[in-house]
Image (cartoon, rainbow, N blue to C red; front, side, top):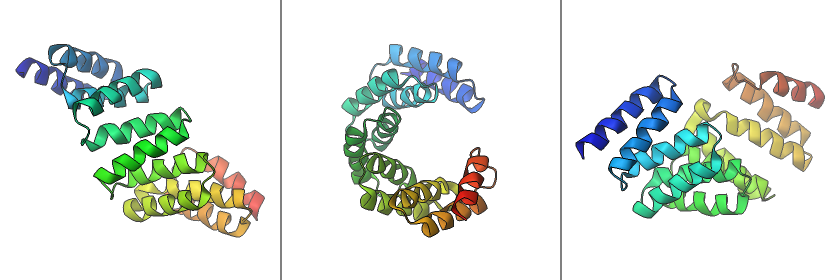
Length: 188
């Protein structure tokens, strides 16, 4: 319905301005007007994730999936929420479902790697982190950061050092640069 679409468009405008509270309010209104609004439910879940409201986000994303089990974004976003909740087993299952819908998404590969790393499946996590970086390039340099930690946990200091140094060269303005520089100093 037109009124629900207008609310969704208002939410999108507020989201672009970084005004998530306003975006959330308009997304909720869009859903009140049209409860089966898949995109509004997905975007509401993503906005709630950004606000750290993980349970609410998961609920909205599960509703979106129920509306269309073949929609990629709700599966991806639910997987991200589950990683943040450290529900790694459920996250891995959810993200594998997302991969079955869109195998070339660097985001889904990155978060599947994080879930698998949380499950101590380092071999599979390594494959996913490499895939995330291969698919996403420097925009997914954070995959190298996780690979650095993975190699460090395996005791491969040289490979860990290489990953952290490459990460810094690809993401020199990342918020965790001071931490990574300390790790590099420790590894040298």
